[in-house]
Length: 463
Image (cartoon, rainbow, N blue to C red; front, side):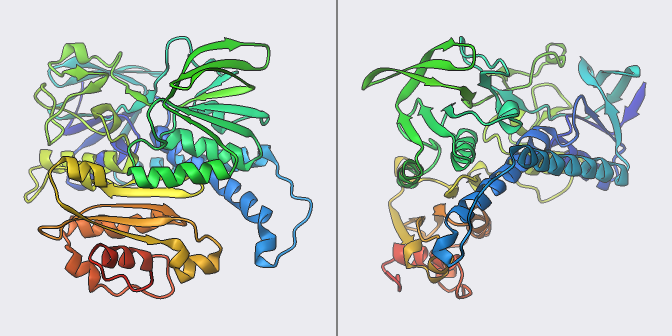
């Protein structure tokens, strides 16, 4: 029996960060990973998809080079090299995680972990079975793509994110089922590469978790790029051919059959809670996610769950921060506060980009707030005009009574970088007064953040 102060099961962005922090706090720490260090995010999600989208962005820029006085002829791209670069980026970072764990003296076990109860678990690896024990075990087993009955991915005609990230050839037509961040990013990528893309979303707007006004602007932008958007619609049946599928789509407008070469299923995720021995513990699972309290503690003493397996928002940065709080709580660190899910930013790296933090305008009103809303369009921002990317909007939502920044929502150039300014503002409990009196450099895209604050109080200067 190998005994540790803390054991982490799962080496994704929640698990490996938690393990490193535990070691920094002086704990003898082990991490168990059955597949790839870095998890889905680093190997098949956050990072490699951004590498693909970067290639798509360059292609789009070259297509519009004439707008900048640059002549380019004979635009071509090599799909194999695009995919190879993406996989290379993932491979580099995977090795980086291994180095960080080694540097921080975390013992890594490669294999599948099974909880045995009583602070014990068994690791089944290629080197045989190993028994581990600890008074503190952190589950960070992540989540996987949800599949719908009758529309299960087969790796050939119906793709998950893995097949969508490593295509051997481009399909001429593609249907993306689900208009959340994952679905929209793939739709954006393939659209930029010249594929005929249709997106089907069951809810009444694309990017359903985003502010309705921002989502409407995104919908318009995607349509202008040639992406067909069907909201309030569901794929109810799928018929497979030799090299194509026919999707039966039903909506309030009726029934339609859409034939495409490939279909990507991006209809959410389910937690990886099966076959890890939870039945040997008192931990509870609801709708595939492990139930925890505000400190990530499950109903089983000494067993914790963080990241995607503990439920929404299923985001890498939420998992990492949650892991740090969990481990520091276990270590007895003073002055901790639980994770505020309302302070977790969300980013969609499509073209255009979308980013947000906090409450939408509608949600704030539902919660009883009287709100002040500010808006500033990028078409009035000098830097955006100079970049040739002047479509988009920055929107702020303030509490009329206290001046608290309740939420911020953006669509446009580099907003996934800009959103962090509002995230910091919320963390510091900043009011409109501090934001108004903050000096923003000129010319920058971030000036739009200042103007959106001023606009909420009738003080905007450039609109």
